[in-house]
Image 1 (spheres, one colour):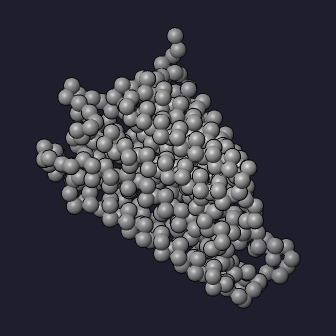
Image 2 (cartoon, helix red, strand yellow):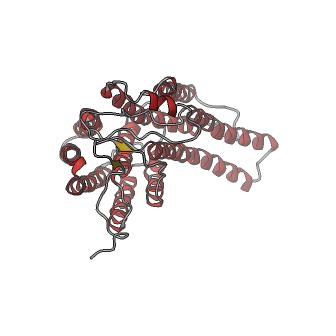
Image 3 (cartoon, one colour):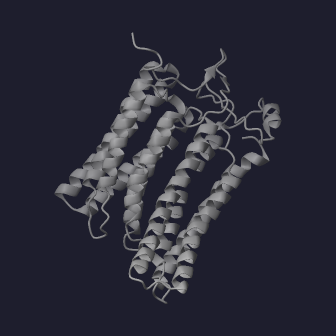
Length: 389
């Protein structure tokens, strides 16, 4: 018989009373396996960040980023509810990390290269492994069986469309493949919203920690690309002996701008979003109720308990919670574009010309869109400060 610590069946991270209510399980952080899994996503995002940022290939950036973000978020949802971090889960995680590396290899760094075959193939294998995990979970967790089987069916349909995109790419044209690519992404992104009534609650502290870690990761990747380019240019001038004091000052200004801009936005993000929008306490469609964050700085716990018996409409609350999570897609994407814009518009240290107008416009546009989505995130999360959802 297998040792329970090495091989455990999936389990729902909740305690149930006889009346179907969910008891809080306290704070739960990311495991070491999850942290390492997040770190592996540094590779495809780094490759994607090395593509030039301009209006011609901005669409390509978002096509690849849609798949990268969905691959990460899909696994995060599963781990949030069912992860046991046993030997089998670690083995699955290692196999998925290999697929993420394959996705990185499939991202063409050359702007003129269409590529994408290896990227799509690796993504499909990764998603199929997630489907296998949901089918296995449906067998061991009766409370989540209906939801897990629906997830498996919808995600399998999405993978089928992605495979069709791969075939279209090889045997027809890239434009036709892009249409299937977008359709496959739409199926997978719409699935959680179509299943909201059956959706099980999320663990707040774990989900917020994972979202914050991913936001920092996506920013640090592009920031590294920006600073690496500046350091390479600085080293080239130093070796050739043509480095002056004014060059050093311009170098320092470029580094400061590349660090200060995304850092300031991250500070605003972290300060304004202390927790996930609250899940409904009592859901007719699910036997579980919300687990509230027990962080000491949240002063609304007493008010939440007082309002627990009040009738609530669960669907708007669930919709807000998932909207909050999925708004991290455009937020982190445009946040990465800010630093990429800085790297592309940086002036040559030995030149007096600052940058081109088009690149300045791209940087300003990315900054404006990032702040817009940051405001939307604050608006959704801020409602939880006014009252308990």
